[in-house]
Structure formats: structure tokens, C-alpha cells
Picture (cartoon, one colour):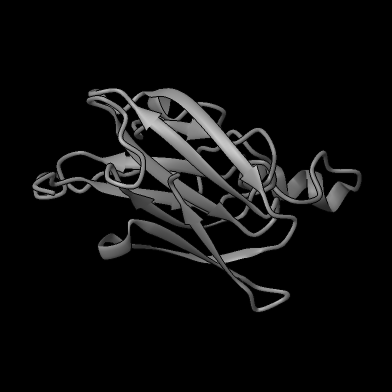
Length: 162
């Protein structure tokens, strides 16, 4: 693949996990807002003690990235997924002219597939839940399979495109 793009996951605060993309890594160093802007919240918020309320005043999480000079995520998860890895792979399942990324999760035990338009916006997303924390993902091109490494059982899941 001749694409010069960096795909990133951000293990954010509570309900603040993100997918970010740097389409020009050789250019300006981009800032995605951590730990100033997030669509999530600090753990323990809403604050129910004076101490937590004072701490939040010192370190709020702004609900916009762009307004504060940061890059907006292409995906902000509405629940905590605890992303582990992200890979871009357009060979496993071909989607005419769409970029495809896969993200694995510790919290939900799922693999997420995102089909991206040419501007990196998400056109479609799918998920498969395995019910166990997914620690890692690898694509083996020679056999056109994706391997998932599950944490609790120590199992390896083999995904194949039938």
C-alpha cells in the first residue's frame, strides 16, 4: 500500500475513546486534543464531592476539539471500548474504493470494522463481539486471514473471508 497515513486509537477517559487519522504524517505535527478535549468524562464525574468538583474546574474536558485548535476524531465511541490496536487492511474484504480499518477492544471484546470514504469519514461500521478481551490483531496476507489474540482464554481466533 502506498498510502502515507497514520491511523491512531486513543484510549481516552470514560466514554472518550477515539479513532484519529493523520493523513499527512510528514507534515505538521498534529494535536488531537488529549487531555484537553474529549467527548468523554473524567472517571468519577459528575463530581459528587467538593474535591472532585474543584479538580474538574482545573482540568475540564472540552466537548469540542476544533474550537480549541485540535483535530476532531473520525470516531468518538459513546461507550468505553478500551481500544487495543488498529490496522488498515483493504485486502481481507474488498469494498470498492473504500479504505477499511479494524479496531480491537478490551472492554467490549469486539472487533470493529470501519469503511472509510476518500476524505476518511466513516461510511459504515460493523462489529463482532467475542465476549472476551481482544489483546491484539494481525493480518496474514499469504492466507488472507485476520488473527485475534484473546486475553482470558489465551485463544487465537482466525477470521476468514468465505
